[in-house]
View 1 (cartoon, one colour):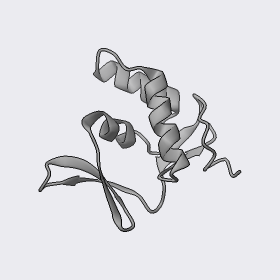
View 2 (cartoon, rainbow, N blue to C red):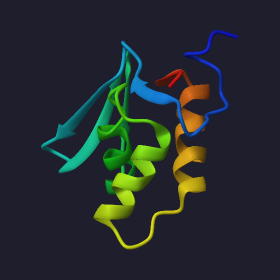
View 3 (cartoon, rainbow, N blue to C red):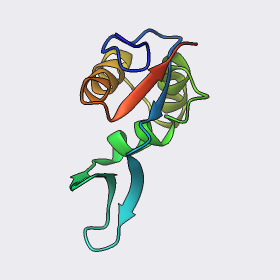
Length: 97
């Protein structure tokens, strides 16, 4: 499997949104959304915060640390599980660190 689409993430992977995915804000719903071909996914605040850091520069460990600095408690394993699900759906790609 290509490294950018493998479902398991390590702390040094640098996730980024797939080319066909855009993070946006829906004014009607007043919520962050992911725009995909023929699909809109409404995100909660923490999901949007995680995806906002998926720019291909931040490692998974840096994303967890940044969220930890913003909020009191951020379970790193939950962040990794969330990203792993999105990698499996091919909404996020994880390049090697």
